[in-house]
Length: 118
Image (cartoon, rainbow, N blue to C red; front, side, top):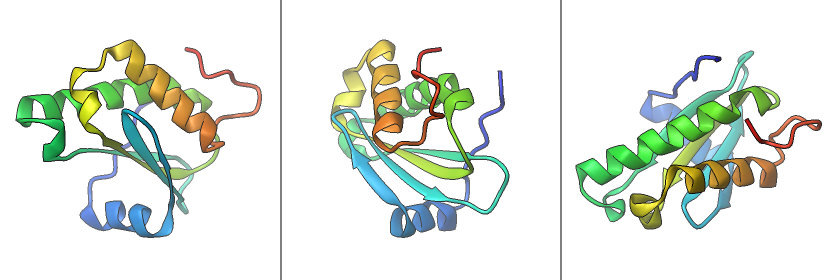
């Protein structure tokens, strides 16, 4: 399985937030901005409205793993940020996978021949 390259600098998160587009959903918000690299990078965030540290870390792990399953279907070189919403704290992994795939399709970031299922 391909490696999930991560956004780590605060400046990168801010650039995606200010220059990119947003697709809100029930479990998460997807932000996307083109980058000048040959690959996509991913960032995951969960604010205190999601819950305590355990719930926030769980939310980020779920989103990261769900995105890893969609990695081979993503077209182009993007910087993507996934921001957890409060319902993510109690969501099942299958629901998070469905949400990630749906958000990527709504954002039209999937390769044309893919259906998003791993």
